Length: 365
Image 1 (cartoon, rainbow, N blue to C red):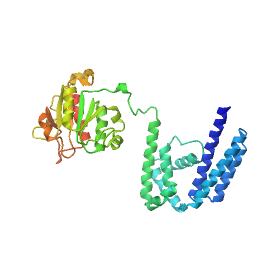
Image 2: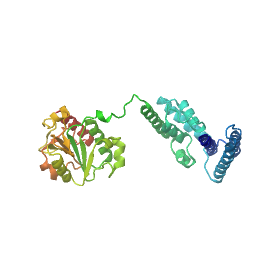
Image 3: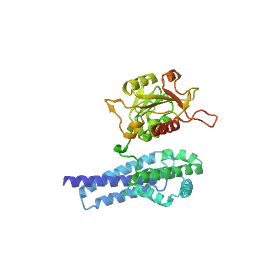
Image 4: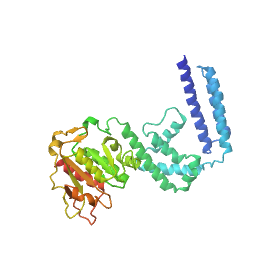
């Protein structure tokens, strides 16, 4: 009996929420008068009183709901909200639908999904998802606080931008909802190679995030960051996570104040790795002519790691700052320095791309 009573109360409160939101929505955008909103309240209150189950609960809920809605109406009447011009709204909607149609999105179905998400208990249409529907609503029916900002934009530019955003959000929702799409492999499927990356004072969090993604895809053992390099749970972690897309949570990582401290760690816990710097110098060799150790361990999956100490041979690849490169003070301490030949005038590329090429070559050889 108690469970049924609680279930009835929750249902009535949810219904009250829908009525409240809908009446406020109509009033905000100038498509209904105060009298119209009050009629919505009264109709809902009558509906609650006519419920056959828990009439007492429904009656008291109707009184509370009516008071709640009336309070909301009074608050809106007392506030100087700028109401949306119907012609402006129709223009925004027409241009948005035009650009959505160009992208292959069913604009009419999206509009209907947006309306139903506000006025029914069905939730968000699975064809589009919550984010896409909310983005559609944010442009066509912006909140009063956002109305002035939306009105100040060039309609075609804003509509085109929102259409592309909605298209992306809907596609992302369908991809995440599709059971046959594998967004992440099972942990037991991940293969690890004796390859370690050392990121020496890289400054771009987005760049570092891309390196984490590439390193995870290449099966790197771990990443060591030094100095100002953004790293998980530290400097620039939020921006890094946006481009790493979860790879930073999979790959083991350690941060050191200086690159020399990272080298001391490698000597103690990874004593048999070759230290290879990637930099354009007079002593640099082509990256694909070096014989990299660890091939036997990589091909046989026999990585020997005990108490965080890896005795297997491998490679530690040093990548330096985007402008100044690998620290010149540690160059003499490296076993090899390699470079990727360039056909253009620039002697550097994005570190994440360089790392991916070098890692692939090291693993292959």
